[in-house]
Amino acid sequence: MQKPMRAFVVVCLSVSAMGGWWAGGIERAAASRLKAGVARVDLTPPLELNAPLGGYGERMNRPAEGVHDRIFAKALVLADGQKKFALVTVDIVGFPPTLKPALVGRLADGGWTKEQIMLLASHSHTSIEMNAINPANTFQVPQIGIYNPRVLDFVMERLVHVVQDAERQLVPVSVGTSTISIDGWSRNRRGGDLTDKELTITRVDTTQGKPLAAFVNFTAHPTFMSGEDMLFSGDWPGHLQRTLESLIGEGVTAMYYNGAEGDQAPIGRSDAGTSRWERAERYGRDLGIVAWTQWKQTKTLEDVAFAYHLHTVPLPERTWHPDFMKTGGAEYGLSEKLFEEMLPVMFPSQAESISLRLGDLLIVGIPGEMAASLGLKVKSESGRISGARHPVIGGLADAWISYILPAEEYRRGGYESSVSFYGEKLGDAIVTGVIAGVGELKR
Ligand SMILES: [Zn+2]
Image 1 (cartoon, helix red, strand yellow):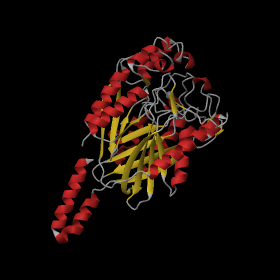
Image 2: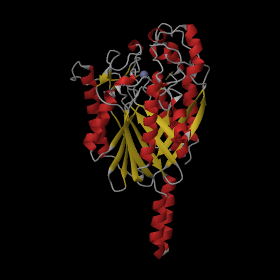
Image 3: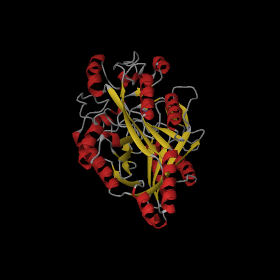
Image 4: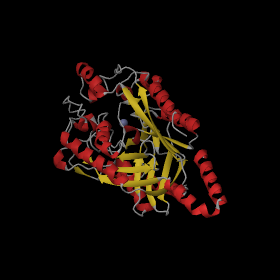
């Protein structure tokens, strides 16, 4: 980031020229320094709340039967004295469009607005069903999950507190990001070989050098577990975060967020056995070691860019794919009549996308499951526009509106098209909209 660097150098030169003013100059520079605070909360609902697991219609809203490994919400609050921003990563399948407005409402007293909060889901298919925490879901369809107000209260309380807790911990920080390309970890589940191989890690340390947060972006579905598996788990991202926390130590908080994972599936380690739980653990642990190796090589700086922008993206008309009743509709137990009623109630007519610049990192929020080809396009274009060296997709950000595919892929059909609810123009609309948003980021 060029501009703040130059500004900082100018301040140093001018105060050194003024001799005795040196100490005061340093204090002034320190006052506007970037601070961050981090917090986590256990988001595993007590079993007596009967929270259903999300991601597979065949579960028929059955509640989780136990806990394999706990799921978490984690918050990193950034503040520079003028503005603040909360990144919240959650081990969950996605967020219903109703969730963030309600959370912002609960945090409004603390000066929080929707521009300042980005929710990022890991997309774990062994965590809370998003329609169980969606009050707009009045449809009583077990395949899509049934609204459970007690689970929503549980989740909402914890999300409010994790942001407030993180904000109470603010300390001066240094930040750095790096990216590596790794082969053999993901495949395109719609065929062909297009994958996003990048693993991007962001290191947030205190200015004393203590690791505070490690942010990991990698693009793949957490789908080692199937619809038969009825225990709460973070799937491989849960194991990745635990592994990274153990290897880095010092109480660091590892935060995972997905990318344009719409067509990206994980490739299990070849010698990981046949147990789905074991395969998930092995993948997450091995990827955690890769992330740790990269983390160690990541350099941090104290004087970094910090900016964010929320952009409203108009969406094409809501509709469903001709294949819908064969694939998604069958899985989710929906008739055309019911779906006609459901579309305008559960799917918004416009979406919002936040871009966050933090040093060399640029997170572009995507409100759903974007195909990797579109994700790569957004990454390269937004890197070019912003000058950020590490553009990433924040997949499933803030709200899940559906799968987001290129027009030709939508027309080709298949599962992902059938769970895409804005027709063939959705991919273009989102790509154009989010790139326009990046263009409006302050520099
Ligand atoms: Zn998915």
